[in-house]
Image (cartoon, rainbow, N blue to C red; front, side, top):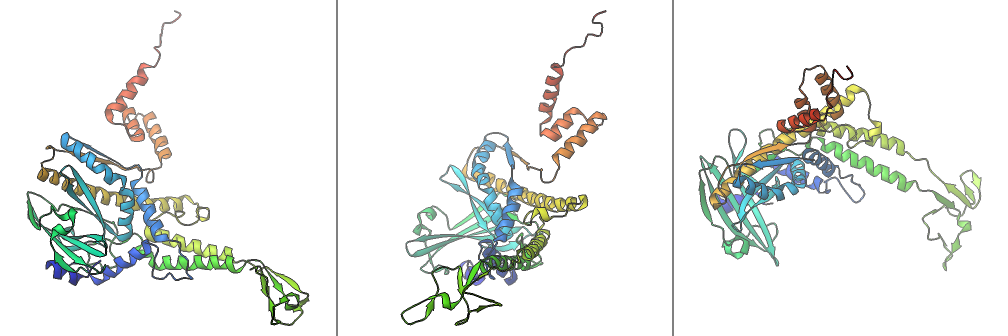
Amino acid sequence: MFTKETIKTALGVEVNVSTLMTDALKKWGLIYTNQAPWLTDKMKSLNLGAAIASEIARSVTIEMAVEIEGGPRADYLKEQLEPVLEMLREKIELGCALGGLMMKPYPKDGKTIAVDFIGANSFYPITYDSSGNITACVFPDRRKIGAVWYTRLEYHNFTGNQCEVVNAAFKSTEEDQLGNKVPLTVVDDWAGLEEYATITGIEKPLYAHFRYPMANTVDPNSHLGVSCFSRALTQLEDADDLYTNLVWEFSSGKRKMFVNELALKRDANGDPYLPKDEGYIRTLAGTANIGETKGLFEEWSPDFREAAINSGLNSNLKRIEFLVGLAYGTLSDPEAVDKTATEILSSKQRSAATVVDTQKALRKSLDDLLYAMDKWCDIEGIPRGTYNVSYDFDDSLVTDRKQQFSQDNQVVGMNAMSKATFLMRNYKLDEATAKQWIAEAQAEQPEVDLFQGA
């Protein structure tokens, strides 16, 4: 949004993002919003960047459940987290596309804890710890009122067991300029904020960084994440080029009619003109010959090359799937995917690994988010107490449910697994409920009288 020099001038801090990462973040953002740098008026787009990010986010968050227990504080945090979970899928999609997402909670109206979502191209890391966690960061908040742009820069600097927070407001008539410093009171929503504050008694920063779990091959020295499609940029461009060729093949291959000028009407100047119908194209002037035939009309119906182009496009889509960690058939034609058992297993494992790794990264960021929300509750004097959180991610993409059920059933028959364990694994029951099911089933069994009829 702003240059590193602009942030340094405004707050006196050095933004720790390399030029390589700055350029990459800009490119990923353009690709995600279907404005890839290779697109032109003639180049069509498959919008694969957004499709890949969306598919990963969908697989990661589908049927995800978060349980928070422990008393009044836990109940309050659960209520505050609900709006976050409702929009989590679309926000994680953005994080996957840009390589990262920041979730920053803050107290609102003295009653609620709201959460800001900031893409990796809109926050400014300043320092990191030895594990690569962002310990100091600048977050921009922009408002346009009339023809004027107002920007608030919020700087968090975590050291030891405390966090220094600095707020500074700026005013400009240019969208890409920070402008001059003004009081926080110029914007009503900022009027109650302090310019300087120190928060003590904390163990980590009051924000949560979701980092897409892929090694940074753009800048190996950077602690920032990379886009989920960062390793397939060349193939994404090739896919759009092939798709453009396919569209052109159908457009240029429409059935048309050659018309000899002798069959055309003439205007006032004596020049022949075609009917207003794109199904006609004119032949060479003044000849009755059409190819090797003679006549006034000749149908033109070219051979289509869509099979060859589609085959090339499908092969390219499979390369993209491999590079971004998705199973074959996710983007490519599933009917054209090899069906050997080994290939299917390998393909599924690739997708499963991508999903599981991303779920682990999401779980960590949600833990950090809840920690920050809990500390804001302490600061604001909101219901005291503790909380325990548990996560349940749907694992149907990782585990073949039918196969697991069948195998577990055989193990129970071998007396190598208890019925309670079977129910807990295959029906996601807790131990008490599983034992209750077994007891109820046994109670319904009729009693057998061994001496009946004796």
